[in-house]
Image (cartoon, rainbow, N blue to C red; front, top):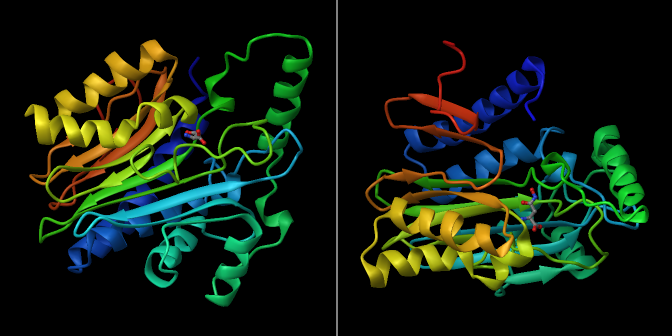
Length: 300
Ligand code: SD4
């Protein structure tokens, strides 16, 4: 089911702001890692998306956010799971990568680490969105009545960015509130390196959205990189093979965004829509929601 034109426009504008944030970093000669981080921060700051400010609720009515970053230069990676407080979970992941000596920190201890790192925190009210709260009530009611939740908008909305910089370095960043009415303590694919997030300069950078359990079981992001590395598939062949032929039949509704060392882009999804966009070196910026060619929404 399609959204109202106003809502569609809001998504295009949100995507545009994120792409712009990443583009500015890259045209200033910044790294792919900084660009991917900046783009995800912009999306976390939007209440529209299921990450940071607009994160969905667990079955217990709390928010538990997951995020990850990976740097394709040396496969360094950082991630957090089950946090609520830091304004930008992607910066928490970045701090784990750069300052903890570890790859993944969780829960209260992760937040303690973020405090020591001096990251910005927000009150619970900052993260409250009426729409997510309603979605939780609807999902819980449906569960009670034994109905199957078919509404993908209640399940998706994870944000991610992949980037390739002038040096040809790749990076990926992903941030999410997870899935509406998830069990407390449940961790999805986003902060699991190789599942929802991956970057290595020799193959590709990947960020995933969708049914996290399936993406973890199929090591989705790493599977795409492996197909390029060992099976000689192109980025697009590998991405489609995984998203369309492997994940969809397994119940892994969702999609991925990907860029390779040559700057090729692939954005396949197996659900009704996926907010996505691309910005190139020449500044050309395209966005899309449904299974249609990307458009320059400002000109449209
Ligand atoms: C997860 N992949 O936690 C995430 C959910 C998601 O939009 O993509 N939501 O499983």
